[in-house]
Image (cartoon, rainbow, N blue to C red; front, top):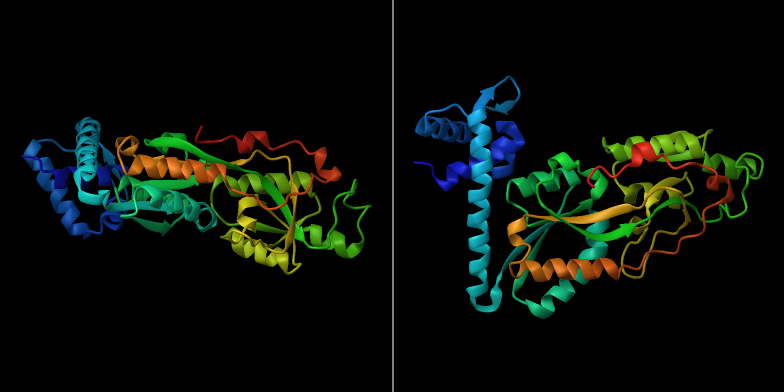
Length: 331
């Protein structure tokens, strides 16, 4: 007999492709997971995984069970979510994962809208990277993940996806570095200003975003040198604010709160916008209070007030977007 507990473990291991990652997702000891998988295989009389040194690959039986388990677990989750409608005051917890730069601007408005309809619902916010958000969704420890669409490969997404807002990329420069009339970044700037413009702060994300920014820098600022690498937009903008260099960032990241921004100037660049999307298991889309939260999220995205952005500098207008490396991998 197969239990729901075993199915959830199997589902998490299948998506994680290793017991180590599944153990972290589920918060269970690795030997316990291995034992449950062995019991499951014994009960059905078939091997579910080919066990390699560092990876577990699904057998044909495993692929069959994965398809069926997704339907079963989705049905159970939908039933449990639906039963919340019958609880007094529609109380419950909605777990949301997002980058800090998105959460701090988007979620306060969404929570305010949500509280008008469901004041008893608690929001559990996780500040996580896109990769971590997906893992937590697969492990059923998040209800909603808010991520940049191009940070999630389409082949890895099996959730309902909704557009939240579009965030333009900008060139953040220190105050006083006026690029509005610069036709030639070498001839039209003095040595000091040219030195700042050529000092680029890049991002060590290990994602397609890092590669596309490197490609854009080579085209737009040929004489640039990387003076710093950062893992967060906030650190990069802090460096720009101190006059250390420049960075290409999503405009929203320059906003600290409702009325405050980093003390930098932002110039539009010819790059496709960063599309922010919400990922949610399909069984929650039409069930309350999740449906109301998703609507609040969408409205909050439409109401976002971006910081002031100046027109694209003349010397950047002739730069072709790096279309081949900036294609939206989640569309």
